Image (cartoon, rainbow, N blue to C red; front, side, top):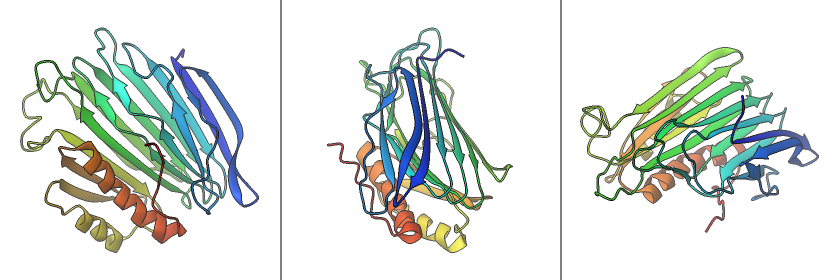
Length: 271
């Protein structure tokens, strides 16, 4: 299938750090040179879309393979901005393969869906039972000339995770402002922004899930967490501020990184 942009990364352990042993990009996707943000040897890549925005009918494919014992963070240079899509939605597909004891953290900037835009995102993860997968998502409504809170047409985000060949997660998020009830009970419940954090790791247990649930009990956010077979969990939060929700999701990330890997809080140094 022809795409607007394609990116492929294969990451392996090389000595005391993780390195890309194969990479390829075509079209409107590429990566900056690798960075090492702490002393753990984990490699960080920034994905760049030189065009700065996602337009009608654009499609993007990112494939990441993290081999045995390697560890990586994949982030973006800036927000994913979805502009008007009068004929075809923007599609963004991510495929992930994690070997034994491999670690991948997907930490993109927020998705901003503008007026009359449609966006479909799919993430498919195949992971070894000893691997670790974490991902963070924040959805923000873009500015509209009439001041409406939800000017976009449709946003769909689906994440499928298979652990050892067996399904552990099928998370299908669908937001259509034109349908009744999006802003009410069972929808965004009076809020404008949504954040999700997904974690799959054999060390997830009931005590950890309860700890995450307590972190979500803050005044300006409505949050909850669900334990999934994996083991793992999915945390959701509703709010009205991108920075606040992102910080809350990074608080969860900090807890897991410190406990599982002795790693510090992510400092992606974007600003």
